[in-house]
Length: 333
Length: 297
Image (cartoon, rainbow over all chains, first blue to last red):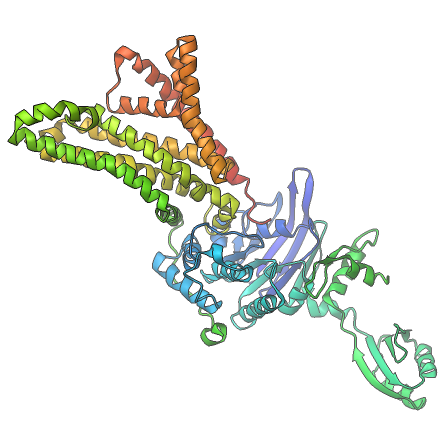
């Protein structure tokens, strides 16, 4: 069974089209949801949570109809919001137990489970403190505990690393990875931080201006970029590079005198690099396939979608703030 | 690390029926209020009134049988303040006095119970779970109604039964079932009216200080304005501007204690229109505010 399916889903806010004829099918696993502000991510999350009926189209999440079964759907989905969503005046364990009860768990089970989940997330010593006293990282874990308490099949995570320091971010990503890989939870990770998606998710949904630009495995998206190699050598390589060009290889020298990027034609064998180097009596000391960063994949696909080819602004892969520089850099500035 | 040591365990239990979702909201709301020291201070104030009446009924009953002369001496003094004859007006006055404490309590509790949900995203948290908006609305209203009943109706019922049990026979209880129904009805009217008004105000003015000021305007300023307008225009209908008085008029009607010489039956008739109208408006305002909340932002 698929994780969720949307069929020709369109949603309007007044006259503004937030989602336009979106059709996609996503299999269980860790999935990233990425797009600019206003691209339609939040609308999609609302629809997947059963909080909003789309203006047109239909779909299902974990087998539940998104138009009819919002409440039943939320029994199997855990939502971790980006913003603070806390009930004032409660202790950590009470808050998580309340989340369990509101998800339909009996009180005794909810309380026991709250203790378990908080311990699992490393908050066992803080569980009797009021959540107003928690640090940002602890609040993030508390929100994750509230999303996990009823053992949902699917976790919707909205910017789970927002506001965390590098160690906290690392720990959160590790946790999500463990949940996805070891415990088989399906995740939908909505974030601007492509590095987080790269780290945790197998697949990605890229939305842009209300349409889905692409959906698929990150590896497959990167495959379109195969055929790029970084070459490193010792000594003079002018003749070697000319030989490469005559074989139909595009050579890009990007600054350093002993390095270049080679974009090879179809059917190229990497052994040819060594053969040509051997012919010119030079030493090829480095040959690495160039991995395209997810950020680059995103920009490439979105730029192809945009009629003007404009690059959107998106956060850098290292978890920094939205970074116009990243977009400009990819433009070759 | 805990993560490594304990691992994640799945849970496979049976989920409760959907309708149960209101109960944790009510229980959590009461718990949040009960934890506040101000609640216990106000409850103590309410208890003073209750305990005085409780003791008064006992003393009067004791003196009636043991020493009627002393009862005659102090009875007149006690009649002014306490329940001494078991008449419906006395219960009405008792509940009215308790209601004043309730008003103060609600002024402080409103920002905790409902205002905080808007300020800290609690409402979005509730709505992201397996409930819908109507569970939240019903749960919060029931919380406030419970607080009102706890301070007004339950003590009045306790006094009613105390009076009945300390009288010579159980005839008092049998003959005054109307009072029992009246106490419960007045309590419910007060509970529903105050809960809807508080919910609407707290939803639109969630911060504590502005909420208390708005609450004070409704219960202090409006009655003063109504009283002044009554003096200027010579029309008693202006007194209906006081929501608290409207509730009391309905309470009088429930307890069959309307004073016809003061034209209170006509005022009660209008109060019977005004209170439901205000409640409906408050409910609409509250629901609109709840509907406006975005769970995913």
